[in-house]
Amino acid sequence: MSKTLTINPKAVIFRKMTTGNNCRCKIGWALPLMLFLTALALRTAGISNDLHLGNIYHPDTPKQMRAIDRFMDGQYYVETGNPDFDGYPFFNSHLIARLYIVYDGMQSFIRGHLGVPYEPFEPSMETRYWTARLLNALVSAFAVLVIYAMGARFWSRTAGVIAALLLALSPLDITAAHFAMSDTMAAFMALAALYFALKAYQDQRLHNYIAGGILAAAAFSAKYHGGMVLAAFLVAHLCRYPLIGPALSKESLRRGSLLTGTFLAGILLTTPALLTYPKGAFRQIAGFIEHTSGYGMRAEIAEMNLLEQFIAGMRMN
Image 1 (cartoon, rainbow, N blue to C red):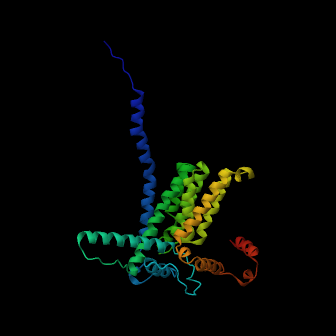
Image 2 (image 1 turned 60 degrees about the vertical axis):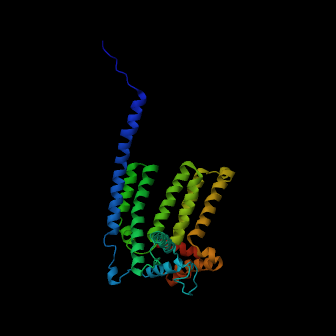
Image 3 (image 1 turned 30 degrees about the horizontal axis):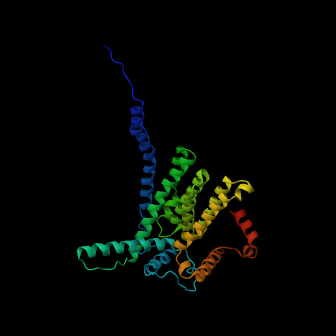
């Protein structure tokens, strides 16, 4: 007697879910992972920058390194009278100081558990340089994954791979990661904020506004012009409410207020000087922006009003 072959549809679906899809998922992330590792290798190659010879290659780096000591001691506001120092964005220094404080607490706990006398962690200047450079290299490499995810999610996987490849091999991005500076961190935070701006345009979930606001604030505190990514987020929001009526609806205003409030709260968290001495810190930040906006300005441009300066600058660019 012949037997009839029967196929269980549920078993077929389960097999596809546990084999084919996972296989495609693994293959789909294999290339971005290779680009991430390539980017990390390029950014860590020669990252010492002759540090053993005392070379730092950037005049602003010592500001960041000296600020770490102050932040580890809880001193967030300093008045020096030097316009190149007062109001300088120190998000990287804050972040590294937090890492050292966490490390010191962990080693204190372990020493106490083992019965070993506590020795405060006091990072040398060279340790701070290495921490800042390695952190920038790692963040810059992760930006490759962010831009891949952005391209693959909102355009196509091919677009994501091309964008990730261009960023992984970007000479400017590789060079910036070799400095103990905040440019790389600001670029990463702005890129991540842009990713959530596109997500907010796509599905309008509130957590996208919260994440985008915090990341935009971190970009601002790392490099003040990095906060301009908030404008891209507002454009994404208004594209969902293109007419005046919907734009002024409770739903739209609630999301816009959430984004703005999160951004402002994020600035306070990432620039603690605004909490400890808000009046002085705000004055310093405004003064620093005004001071640095005039770098390299010719006399004939300096005599123009602000709008004329902007038009002249755009024309030259």
